[in-house]
Length: 257
Image 1 (spheres, rainbow, N blue to C red):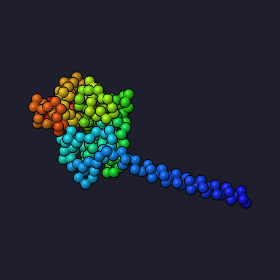
Image 2: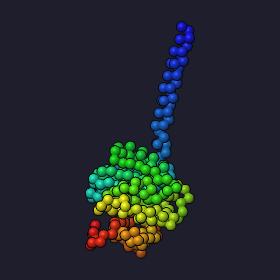
Image 3: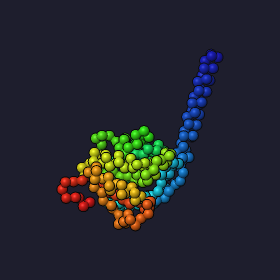
Image 4: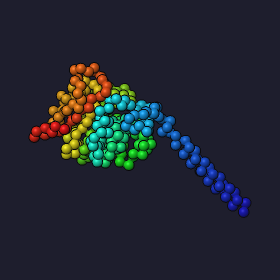
């Protein structure tokens, strides 16, 4: 009897300790994402809500003003599949989801950015049609985490603008040494665009835009500047960013859109 009572007492103690451990785990894990938030931002695309920015994650909404306006005010993404290369906080992907995209795949080389987007989509309850993928540092190409046969109606990106070597994970959002990411993006566009699809890229660097325009024909792509400003009138790095449309060259008369 005494041994049985001892065993019951030990079992009850283990249950209490287990419950305490679960409670402690939940209590300590629940606010982890909140602790990572560097800033909360308000933006016109989500007037009644805030977008979180984690440490080391890029945020500059002026880069993509014209792109976000296009998403808001037209049917650009409605019922379309979208790939965003370099999602950062997820702002553009969130805009696509809110505007009715059927599916969005968002990639980033910074694991904190992937966690950041996951946090934001959960806060905004927009996560049903979103897939997040982390780009490995040892294979940082634009389509390194995209399947060979995967295609999208729209590929969007606010890629790094300046031709420099990144020195830290956060600088991958700023610098593209030898424009290697640009090369990989252009090289894979025709393969990963669905028929009739296009890419929209936001650049705010004269050198990058001129390089893009020079390289595009080598990959049998056509470039259209969706902006009334002239590059010769702009500083080397400028804001707001300029929206550039890239589409496969066609043998017939060029599509005006």
